[in-house]
Image (cartoon, rainbow, N blue to C red; front, top):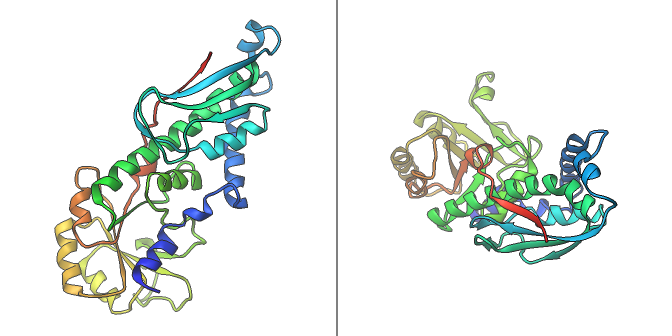
Amino acid sequence: MTKQQKIKKYYNQREKLTLKNRKYLRQVKRLTEDFLIEDLDSQGDVTSDATIKGNPKVTAILKAKESGTLAGLEETKWFLKRYKIQITRYKRDGARVKKGDKILKLTGGIKDILKIERTILNLMQRMSGIATQTDKLVKKVGKHVLVVPTRKTQWGLVDKKAVTLGGGGTHRLGLYDWILIKDNHLKLVTSNKLPVTSYFTEVECKTKKQILDFVKQKPDAIMFDNFKPQDIKKIIKQIGKTNIIFEASGGITEKNIISYAKSGVNVISLGSLTHSVKSLDISLDIL
């Protein structure tokens, strides 16, 4: 398997992040159900019940209030089907929108729409915010480096799906996925000899010595953890041609990501993609 084939297989598992995948569906179901239960409790929407007689049929429009990249439409469509709300979709996941663009039209009982309003907005705004920031960074670094999140996520696989819709990858999906040997593992082993295993294996390194020692053992990937881009470039040049995947992580921001992209690494991971997200502003208005 070539280096690019390995990157696609292990760092960009976007095909697994679909509602056709039972594991992903389970997470979306749990997430949306918990939002709604928390919002309604046992009393329901007391404001709508107190002010609106009956449940008249209405139309509502979801609009973008700022430019960005959309995500969460697949999940929203699935969720709304359970509440007998008809959907007309104007945009698709991964589409870029401008302020004022229509995203969805909802038709159904007004109380049904108001009941699920905050759940679907929270879902779409967060996912779209992640996709928007990812898209911005992907444009900066170009196609030769894959931008991925870490496991520092609030919503797990849902956050990772949003990154892929912005043009990024996934990194590993969980602890079960493949081996990533980190500093806490290395503190408790008697030697730096890599385990003999059939799993894809990456080693997190904090020093040049660690990197040069592990390169001799030919792991599938090596992570440069909190290295400066100029130091990464020198070390990769010293190592020379290899099929090992190089990842940069730690201290990477929108301001310095181009320098890391030019350092020779194949993958750049950022925790900030998912742990410090700015939601995309989306509104829902009854016509």
